[in-house]
Amino acid sequence: MTKSKKDLIILSLGKALQVIIALVSIRILTELLSEQEVGNYYLLLTVLTLFNFAFLNPLGQYYGRHLVKWEHSKNLLNATNVLLFLRISAIVFSLFVAFTVYQIFGYEKYYTLNEFLLFIFVSLVAGTHGVLLNAVNTLGDRIKFISYVVLTLVVGLILSLVIVHFIDKSGIGWLYGVAISQIIFSFTLYRYIVKNNNFSLEKVKIAFQKEYVKKIAIFIIPVTITLFLQWGQNQSYRFIIEAKYSLEILAYIGVGLAVSGAIFSAVESLATQFYNPIYIRQITHANKQDRAKAWNDLASYMIPIYLVLAVYVILLAPYITNLLVAEKFYEAYIYAMFGVGIEFFRVITNLVYTVSQSEVKTNTTILPYTIGFIVTMSSLYFFDMSESNWLIPLFVGLSNGLICLLLFISMKKLLDIKVDVLGLIKSFFLASPLLLVLLVENTQELFQTILIIGISGLYFLFLVYIIAQKRILGENR
Image (cartoon, helix red, strand yellow):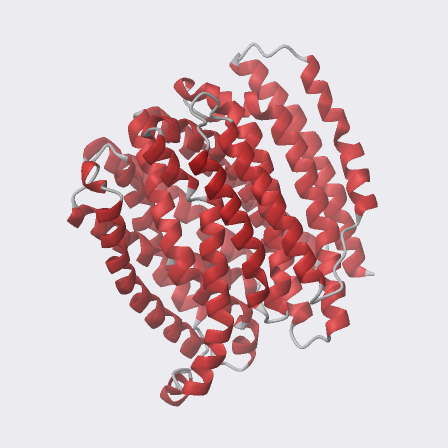
């Protein structure tokens, strides 16, 4: 068996466990917490995502982009230490912004100020786990990567259950369990990443020299603006829902979108965990023509997978929602269906976005996200959707589609990127047997739900295998 096949099998098994744990968590969360606390849970996630996107993720992206180079030069310990120092500095600054958010949005009705700020600090520190985890994957240790993904999720779920049952039955209590687990495993991840590297104060000093800081800033500042706009496009609508409607409506929409989001995120992360390390190595020291070929090759496998997944989730949304969330949230399946549009265009946009990083011209991504953000905020703020809440995810999905189109046009000016339209048509044709689900009367019985999801899921995995096999065969030619 080739290394590529072994890696794919390891990642697939690990991802299956990860998905099961994540989906079980959604079910338990919606069973244990009230509608208001579920709404609080999604509101807190929105705030955390804002700080991660605006202050922390740009540093992580720069770190990930140059990881392979630092590994080769034995400079990974120094680079990682600089990253951690900058993250802590950014987290401290984030607390001042968190105080402003707390005051402006009147969150004293949900939390005390000290409770809110402590939660933000702990959760942002825990977010370092994600950067270190992605580094392990990029460095090529698939087994260790998957082991820590699963262990972190399992321990996080156990801690969340303990906290919710015995300490604080709230959204903030649940998220504390997740954060504590991430912090615990971050120490071991750090030791693995920096092994066989020596500390050099002189190299660390270089990172703070004016010319190097300027070089990093040129990369990071546009990324920061773009990520803030991404947050605005995909997360900030929750602020509007909470302020304009209610936490209960936010809970239902949040649960529905979480179902489609969890499934798409699982498949996206599996695809990127397998393909991205290969892609990063292909574009490192490559010429422009080879970088374009690397992206087109990547897109020719990932976009068909996403298209097949979109068909699967739309058709199976009532069954998936029945299985994954508490009975009181069953009607959220309609939001899961509309959430497919949001997620499909989001993952495609993320794929197109990698072009800006490979070309180190991240400022080119700002305009498309700005337009999409304005369209989303304007439509949600000025139109009353209280009688038709499904319009909220519909408008967000349409705006995501607009961003995807504008970003593709912008990135095509940097690289000769292409989308294999014929491949997409073939993928849709292969997925068409899933339409047979529409002929079945949904009784909402558990046996029927599991049977329909299982049979359809096996067919979906078969299609993914065909697409992935094409990737492996192409790589080994």
